[in-house]
Every structure is written in structure tokens, then in C-alpha cells.
Amino acid sequence: MPLTLLPTRASYRPADPIRIEIRDAEAPLDGTLTVWRLGELVHTQPLRPGAVQTLPDLPAGGYGIELDGPVGTARTAVEVAADPRSRLRYGFVASYNPGKDVRAVADFARRLHLNGIQFYDWAYRHADLLGGGEQYDDALGQPITLSTVRELVDVLRDAGSASYGYAAVYAVGPNEWPDWQHHALLRPTGEPYALGDFLFILDPAAREWLAHFTADLSASVDTVGFDGFHLDQYGYPKHAATPDGTAVDVAASFTRLIEEVRQTLPDSRLIFNNVNDFPTWDTASSPQDAVYIEPWKPVVTLQALANVATRARDVAGGLPVVLAAYQHTYDLAPAEASDRAAAFTMATLLSHGATQLLAGEHGKLLVDPYYVRNHEAEPSTLEFLSRWYDFAVEHDALLLDPSIVDVTASYVGDYNDDLDVTYDRIEVTETAVAGSVWRRVTRTSQGIVVHLISLVGQDDTLWDAPRNTPGATGEGELRFKFVRGQIPRVRVADPDRTPRLVDVPVRLDGDHAVATLPALNIWQVVHVAL
Image (cartoon, rainbow, N blue to C red; front, side, top):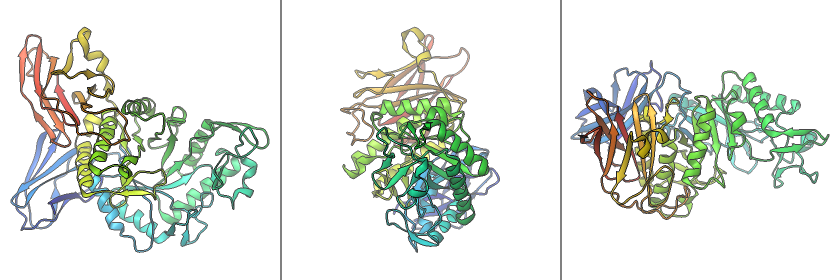
């Protein structure tokens, strides 16, 4: 097995000891450990005896960690966060059988720096979370042991990851429905909205339901120890009437529910599911800890995904944005083509300031909205995910800082003539177009960042479809106006080829500096110090 570096926590607070575990070393440990921040070396230390290495205190930020020596080479990343809620790298767990290897789940959270884990379908029933006692089968017959749920919460907390208990906000099973049907949301025909005959939907803001639902959540915190809750809905209805004829604006009901849950559980973390962006425009400003969206048709292209992420950031007020973009392609296509699909999805979201819910358990992938139907990741997929999640953490300041703004239209093009990228015989576009290089320019606290995503060699831009091997782009040319008296500097990074920022050649040409960019693979991040 290759040498592996594994942080002891998915996220560190400034006061936490930062420790890196070295696994799978086949010889006595020897070599050098280095710490990098946005391509700059900030610390070097020789390996000390033992499999766990302690780093010095580091200021808040994202860091790359490298090991180089006779025992091999390896990389990882660490996040030091003054506010642990400021970012969300979301994962999941969906099985709670007795004897579950909970440490394998925590190790995976550490490997991908997953600082939040959704506990999917842990409860007894949708309208009775704790009614099954200590052991029960959930509504779909999956065996649940509450002691396993508690063990997972504890081990994940020790690993620096928060646990979010799944709770549907307006779903009632057939056995409980007689007690709640007077709050039903009705179709025009008079029948209740439902998921087949499995769950029936009521007004989430009905006072009687809110009292019951918030009491159930409070009891779950006391009984299980969750750090917060994942509040789920199904995207419909948007408007309906109750049996007494009251018209319900469901978006407004969702907002009232979130506010009520926050008032009841002021210390709990809350994430609400905006199914297909409904109703992000209302709920984004409600008292929660992230803006979370589950995209479905018509959000089928990379550009549509980017548009959703951009709209969410616009209304998020600085909260992290997460899209639950399930990669069904893993169940339909070889791992290599599916990995490329996931890479294009992640490149799109990260370049637009959002993250993706995809991986969890001990190495599973989400391919279905029923999380129990997940996909066992191939070793090659896990290696790919490790590289990309490391990259996101290490370059957080260039990707996910809420202050980042899109300045593409202000910088590129003949009229602006401030900055642009060209390739020989390949079109560079502002939107995702098959066969082109998709370019986005952002202004960050660290300077200008140019995102380049290669769609060369692709037949379309669907995000949930197997992808072709990227076509050759050759080297690119970045031209930009520089400030007189300052030496221009351009650096590039690529999660697959150049995992930390490295300098590229720059020459002066009149009013412009010209940098030669390496050939594109899937995604390249270009940092320009203006």
C-alpha cells in the first residue's frame, strides 16, 4: 500500500494540537515534513520517532502537508478554522448495525476532511424519531441500533466532524397519519400530497406539528447527542390547502419551521434541504448554518450547476453553500469515466464557491437519493477524491472565501483588455461549452484567480454522465496588465498534476505581462498577483 498521511482531525481549532498520522510505512520513518500555505513554505521539520507527527501551531487557514524521504512521498492537507461553521465539507453515514466499524467512518472523514456528516435514516419513524427504543427497524426495514448511532457521533466528534441527524420536516407515515391528517396539504382533487402510500405530507408550520417536531429534535439531542439536524423536504407542493380550506405558501412555512427549530435548539447546527433550489430565495436568510441544495432536472448541465451555486452564494450571506449532486454515473459506467464526471462537477462547484455532498461511510458514494443505495468506491476513486479534497482545503482562500467575487466581465475581452487566456485553435468561453476551455475570473483577498476548466474532447456538458478523456489543449497564454514598478508573478495549481501553487514563466510585452500556462487536464487554478 502507498504511504498515507492522515490528519487526526477533519478540521482543527486554533487551540487544537495539529497531528499527522503516518500509515503504511514499510521502513523506519525518516525524511522531512513540510507545511505549505498557498504555495509558500511555512514550516519544515524532520520526522520524529513514532507514527504520529505533531506540527507547530498554525494561524487559521488551509495548508498542504508533504512528506518526502526514504519511506516514500505523500501529501495531505489541514484546515485550521477559528469558526468551525464557516465551511462545510459534507459527508454521510447510512447504516447503524450492531458492531459497525465506526472508526473506519471517522478515518474516512479525516482523509477527506469531512467536517459535517449527515446521519441519513437513523430514526424509528419520520413522525416519531425515538419511538423504537434502543433497537428497531426503520420505516424501510433497515436495522438500527442507537448505541451504534451514539458511537458514531462520539468518534466523529473526536475526529473534528459534526453529526447532523436526518429529519423530514413534514412527512408522516401511514400508522401515524390519522393523528395528523387534519394538517394535510391537499391536491386540487382533495387527496393529500404524498410519496406513494409510504409518506403523507402536512403543513410544516402547523403549530401542533411544530411543537411535536421540535420536541422530538430536542429529545434526539439529549438521547443521541447530535450536533445538529439535516432538515429534509421533497420539493413539493409549493402551494396547497389544508382540509379546513386554509391556503398554505409552503416556502413561508419552511421558513417559519426553521426559525422555530432554531429558537428551540439555539446551539444546534441546522441545514435545510432546498430541493431543486426551492425555496432558497426564502430560506437562505433563515437562521441556519449552510445553504444546501439538491439539484434535479432541469439542472443537468455544468453551467446550470454553476448558476445554482452562484445564485445560492448571492443570497447566502456568507454561509457555506453545498450541493447534493449525486453522481448516478458510478452505477452505470466504469470508475475512470465516472471519476472524470465527478471531477468536472467538483471543479464547477469549487470554482463557483460551493462544495459537493458525494462521499461518506468508510468509502461510499451517493448515486441515489435513498442514501442506503450507495456505491462502493474503487481504490482509484478514493485516491482521486483524496487529491481533490486536499486541494480544496489547501486552496480554500482562493475558492470558498465568501468575499470572493466574479469579475470575468470586467476584466476579459477587447474592451477591457485587462486579463485573458488564449490557446492555439481552442475557443475560450465564459460559459460551459463542449469543446472549449471554460474560463472564470474572480477577485479574492489574495489577488486575481483564473479558473480554467477544459471541456475539450467532451461531446456535451452534462454533469451526471460519464466523461471522455480530456483532449489536448497545449500550453496556454495569459496576458494581463501589470502595475508599473511591480514584478508580475503568476502561479498555477492542478489537483491532479501540480497540487500546490508553483510559479510559471512571465515576460513583459508593452503594457502587458505574458505568462505561459501548462497544458490543461480538467481544472487549473491560476493565481495572479497584480
